[in-house]
Length: 624
Image 1 (cartoon, rainbow, N blue to C red):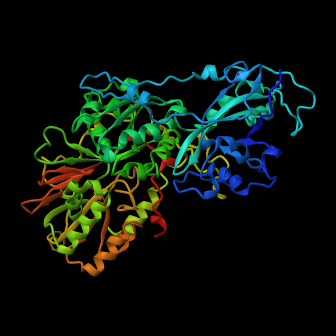
Image 2 (cartoon, rainbow, N blue to C red; image 1 turned 90 degrees about the vertical axis):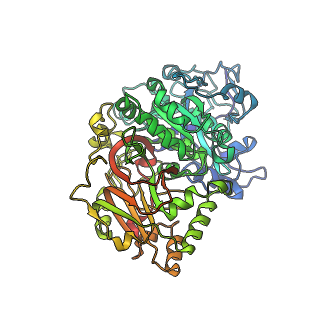
Image 3 (spheres, one colour; image 1 turned 120 degrees about the horizontal axis):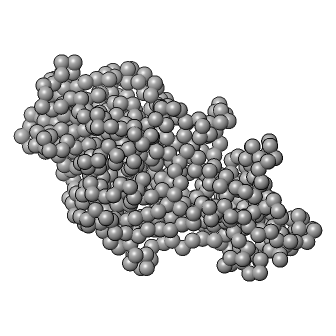
């Protein structure tokens, strides 16, 4: 039997290298298509959300072969799946392969998909939703048939190319850009060399015994393959587009990566709390919130209220697929506000522990304190966030309008503030940041090429430090990790400092947080770190002139507002704030909280999540 001319490839340490296919390098007029060549090469080695150039704005199946320039490498960070192809399977007629090695899976939302997945988790403990089935690893590792061909099959211009004993026909699924998104693309390759160093050194390992497994190992180095994910969708989130965004943009990436997915739709306010509180944690390793920041807040607090909360927080990673109006968690953790890019980050990132904050107020402290993953605020920011809910349809601009209106009015929010400092001055804060910024170093990175100063073994899974391994162990947390160090029922500790009343009686903004971005283009806490054991505090004074306050607010997108002398910026371990106004509110993770004394403390490394490259998005604070 013979097969038609196919793409040959070599497995390298960086990815799958497509060997030269000379007659595919030219357009119909015999000229090199430089735009298309650069398109695929650059897009496969980056993870940006930007708009593509007109030269490479689409990935046309009819032109797919022409989009492969000389020695293109598909990097492991873009590979979703790989499996052997049997020449007798569907699509291969008498050992002949289709002339087009590219296949695009039609995974967009359809009425059929909606019928399958249009359901919610009720108050019952067993979620009712779709499960995806995928080939098991042992099926992927079966050998392919050997095909006999003519002796001249090695020439590039030969009409047919056979499968030799040291070659495998492999279907590779990888992520390619399409517009602003990434989509899964399938490519059939004839791989005639593999990269495992031990094989080259010893010559003992059979080349055909584990090519697919090696591809998958390198593609998911330090990350978990075939995740079991509970996706929680707020169908009303993101102006009502959350469901469609997930089904059309995020789900295809997850499915093609081999993830098992179940979907739950929230039916009422706080429903995600009940879902997280009642779910069977043995069925999942990840909870993905296809929503804004409200659902992650509810999920974390639902897990906190479980009698087996230690097991829940030890086992489950909580992450976000950005499908809402506020997607601070995804922007900070996945470095993107795009659901498809976030889904790719979800399957490629390693699990990392991050700090949470525990909030106590008199009205609920004896029931359940509230966990916060993002921020707490009082004053102008809180008023602008919560009191503009009626114009949420305007998107993020509603928040900016609210802040500007309150600042112009010169509103102030008097209070008393007690603080336990970790780094009080800006100089101390910078030292703390530099000492802790690389705590999670050593994970698999998305960048295809390490920096010139990096060790060749930087991306090795053996390079993860021992502390990271300990943090991800199934028994890392115990009940002591959930005990408050500073219960609100006790007096303010003596080693806490009371802030100057000249400042707190004229307070405009009181903002504390743990993630660098609070919204798209709002880098409010540029020095925030995932697990440094501190909370970032930012305060401004109502006596700051509008002429000075305006440039401060205009620099929120860069994060440089914290450098201004009028802005107080500290790292703290805990605080207590006592409002002195009769009406108002607190905002915690975007949720409205009552106007009463609020006490907050850090809860170190309580929650597992997924961070791209094992860290928050680079805020460039180090160079500020």
